[in-house]
Image 1 (cartoon, one colour):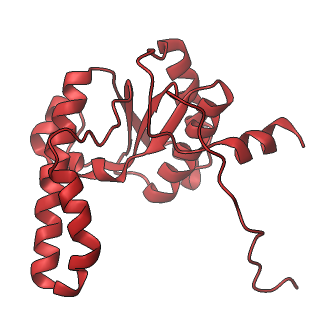
Image 2: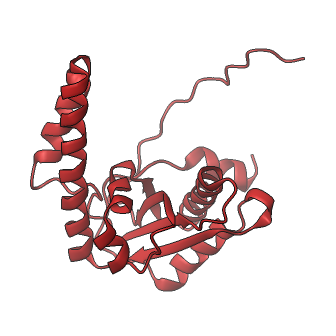
Length: 195
């Protein structure tokens, strides 16, 4: 198996990080790998915010948790049948000791500028390149969907120097894994038809 395929198959989402810092040069390599991902019409519409300040990350974690809990409570109010799925998440996110960023030393937010024709696709392709690049140099990563509320906070966007017309498409944490990620089983591809 070649190195690219081996790296793809070995990469796992990491949710436990050591305190070791990731060097700026390595972060730039990871971000640069993201910029080489395909993007709609070659517009290169992605912009990046890099956060290594742990106090700021904790503050954003608390803000995102509160906003997500409020959103889930509203969902349950409007759709009571969702309670069984949402209540365990509400309990987890209500824990003040829970950090949605798993105490990772780096959070990179990938934003799409308003000229992006395919912002979600561009961001997802960029994020995967970044996560694969990180894995290739021993740095762990995890896409953090619970961080999406950052984009709903005008104060956060202002603090991060992000124009209001930019769209957050990929919040990703990075750091050195505290332990070796457990390999996951993957089923054979489920091909509906081969013509």
